[in-house]
Image (cartoon, rainbow, N blue to C red):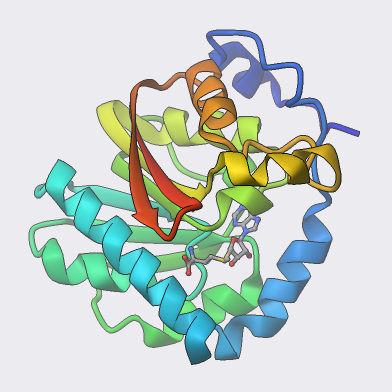
Length: 223
Ligand SMILES: C[S@@+](CC[C@H](N)C(=O)[O-])C[C@H]1O[C@@H](n2cnc3c(N)ncnc32)[C@H](O)[C@@H]1O
């Protein structure tokens, strides 16, 4: 069953939701697994891959805007991307990460030495920040786990300042189309679906970048 959209989210939509965006995924299962994995998340070959994806996403973001005042990472995990960005953004005021898993936020907070880094537990679908608060919103490898991807994107658009950019990295590929016939039926796992959902959530000027291997891509979209 799709969870109902909050009124503010519904009002912010500019186009109807695509028909396939009618089911949510249970949040608990994924988030509990990430909570348990948090202490070892950055280790091993998988940790190395996450590091590389965060690094490339960060480089892309730095090319877009070298002077953002406030940066948000949604589904920040252990805070890897924001730690990397903090080094490249000495003039930024705040770099904020939210994640649904308390274990991830505990690790992210413990690894943050830069005082501008701030982490809190929260979900994409209900961001606890004022409208137009951030100049750039990023998310790496989290979108595929969001309970309601459309609601999460509307929230990203809401907290972005006008002209601000969303940098969304995840699994987006036609190779994943078969998974849409089974367990991931309501997911935006192709460029086509994700572009459709971004457009319906208030974003425009969507540009796609190949980021890692064949199936990890980044959408850059403007508010
Ligand atoms: C694969 S990890 C990616 C972590 C980090 N962004 C990275 O690239 O290393 C996915 C993260 O998304 C978080 N997550 C899942 N659903 C979420 C939601 N609805 N809102 C915010 N975070 C969520 C999980 O708790 C997990 O930490």
